[in-house]
Every structure is written in C-alpha cells, then in structure tokens.
Length: 104
Image (cartoon, rainbow, N blue to C red; front, side, top):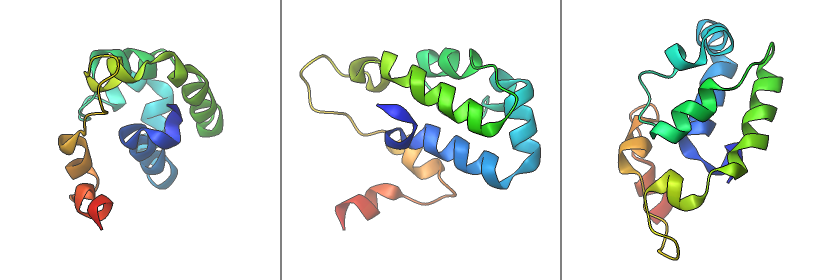
C-alpha cells in the first residue's frame, strides 16, 4: 500500500511538510498528533510506532511499515472484495470531496 497510495497517510505527510507545529508534534508524539484523523486502530498503531527525528525518516519508516497492512485490514473489506472507498477520509482533505475528482 505505501504512503502515496493511502490518502490519509498522504494527507498527514503533506500537512507535516507545510505546518511546522504539526510536523514537530508528529515527530514528538505521533499518537497525539493524529488524534483528529479518521484512522483505523491498526493505522493509528502503525503511525504511533514510528520513532523518527526528521519528517523524511518518518515518511520512510511509515512507507516501509505500511505494506504490512493488508488491504483488507486497512479498508475493512474481506479478502477478494473490491476495495472500499473511505468517503469520510476523502472529505477531510481540506474540505474537498476527492471522490468527485476520481469520477472526473
């Protein structure tokens, strides 16, 4: 799956790139920094387990650990099912409904 293919992980890293306070909080206390994000328990634990001193290292570790999440555990679908969309996550991205972009 990787950081780039998970919209909420992509959003976290993007925000950390542009928001110094969020970046510092993410590096200092990931569990606290992500409390407002709609993540699964497994995604929360994965992010909280990262220990990094730079955003580059944080992103690398997250990307390396993300393949350990099976698509079914991340999306809630059974093995073999089509990937489920996560509209609640899509709408969180700066109030933009990404599903409209996907359809275009």
